Amino acid sequence: MADLKGALIGCGFFAVNQMHGWRDAEGARIVSICDRDPERLRAVGDEFGITRRYLSVDDLFADGGFDFVDIATTVGSHRSLVELAARHGIATICQKPIAPTMEDAEAMVEACAKAGVPFMVHENFRWQSPIRAVKAAIDSGTVGEVFWGRVSFRSGYDVFSGQPYLATGKRFIIEDLGIHALDVARYIFGDATAVTARTRRVNPAIAGEDVATMLLDHEGAITSIVDCSYATRLPIEPFPETLIEVDGSKGTLRLSQGYHLTMHSKDGTKVTNVEPPVLSWAAPPWHNIQESVSRIQQHWVEALRAGREPDTSGLDNLETFALVEASYLSAAEGRTVSLAEVI
Ligand code: NAD
Ligand code: 89V
Image (cartoon, rainbow, N blue to C red):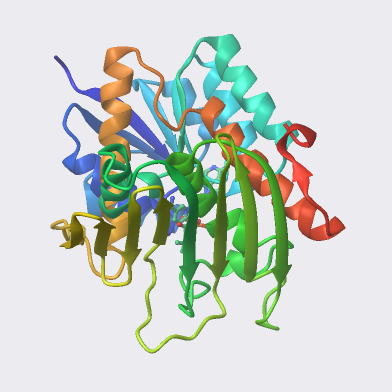
């Protein structure tokens, strides 16, 4: 079967990982790239040997010649680009966060559904192999019925040097990073029905919040805590590890710093090293995220070929984005917010 042909829109900081992932993907390759910044277009085009380069998305779509687009621009352009792709009947991947508002996110999902085009949000954290290992361990039944959990990302890493725009938005950590942790909480503990959140800005040099704590009520009477911080200085910097705790009726499970997975039950305690591989193009500490990029892209190829909805489809991602919206509303109003209020 011929490879699927893709076009990448946005050749910035993170797109380089996506281009590496596509180079390794089985059954797909990038044939065209687009960026309104000629320098970024040249850099990515030269590094990955892509000759079809466009400064304008209108020219990109006018020329066509691809089966899907991979949108790697920042959030402000996501809605217009996804709707443009839908108008051209092109299957679409869009980076997280799906949109700046719930209204935009819902419109994007509707536009793709109406056009009959597959739509996936690049929500990659749930594809990290340590997180898959946690889910597999729960599914194996070792810890019994899960009743409590925690998804935690606490760091003092300087994310602003690579992504300066993160320092300027009114919203920061929940929208950019908490969104991944909230999605992981949904993936592991199931959909949530309500959230209670508190936020704080510790770093005076940025505009948004850099600390957030969310208490989630999940369907099935599971309670979880999702906490994230970029203001936490630790003896060994954990970036970008997501740590997970799970308590169940028969035992406990802990994904701790250094990618150690500890499973404890009446049968004993087992510690496994679940560190992800460092792919040929990857570099620690980013290898964890980089591996998940390759995995979600391969999932997209398989889902597209099979005519299946991808796990993090636009529709699925509305539930994750609703948690983001509900968390900001909860923190602003100091009350518990039901997901039904925002979705
Ligand atoms: P960036 O600013 O470095 O790159 C964005 C690029 O898109 C820029 O080169 C810009 O010129 C280009 N662009 C913007 N609008 C355009 C348009 N309309 N047409 C053509 N080009 C356009 O941003 P980044 O840090 O690479 O982030 C991009 C997206 O990736 C964001 O949504 C961010 O949240 C997400 N991201 C995801 C992960 C992850 O693990 N999933 C990690 C980092 C960033
Ligand atoms: O995954 C992300 O969205 C990134 C980072 C891990 C740096 O927060 O912005």
